[in-house]
Every structure is written in C-alpha cells, then in structure tokens.
Image 1: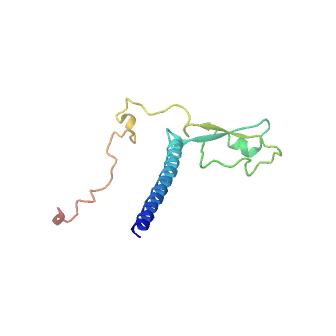
Image 2 (image 1 turned 45 degrees about the vertical axis):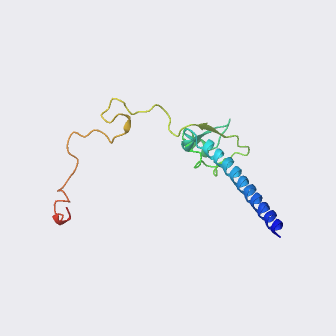
Image 3 (image 1 turned 60 degrees about the horizontal axis):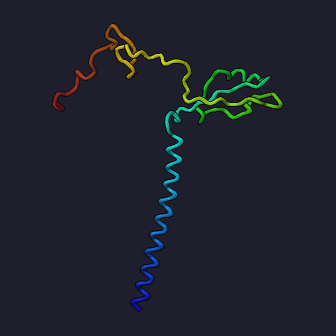
Length: 136
C-alpha cells in the first residue's frame, strides 16, 4: 500500500512539473512576439496611400496624409469607383513627416514647452487667496 501511494505521488508531481513547463514555454513565446512588435517606434508606425496609374477621387483626396497603421482605412477605399484598384500602402516608421521643428537652443530645449510669453498670462485673482487657513 505504501508503494502505491508513493508511485501515485511521484506521477502527480511529474505531471504538475510538465504542466508548468508547458505553460512557461508558451508564455515566453507570446512575450517575445509582443516585445518584437513594440520595439522602436512601432507604436507610431504609419502608412500613406500610394496611388496607382489611375486612381479614384477618394484616394486622390487622401494623398499625402499619414495614418497610424491601426487607424488606416481599408483598401479599396469605401468611395472607390475604379474596377481594378491598385492603390497600396507605403510604410513609415513615424506618423510625422519632415524635420523636427523643435530647437535645442530654445529655453525649453527638446523637453517641450508651450512657447514664449513675455508678459504674465494668468488673469484674475488668486483663487486660493480665500481658502480657509485652518487647513495649513
């Protein structure tokens, strides 16, 4: 009886170990693909429409616009009136086009900033002036 109980316990432990290994290996593969998809500027991956030889009016209206790849319209476009649509997407690393207009020599540098203001921009009185001083 003692041998049967020991054998059953061993089989149970081995099966638990196998299940843990299977779950761990499937989770690792999923994590690797998720990390690979979000490397670099993948969050801002964009597309623009490349027109075919004769494009429809809907595609011409969208020429030069970049869309985040998750928000891009489906091809052929809903208003497409061409029988054989050959429009394609061009892929871009970032949604923004052109050079970066921020200046590293501005007071805010590359950290951002909201612009230059020579005078005080706030209007009105201090709204906290009338607060109860018992809270301090």
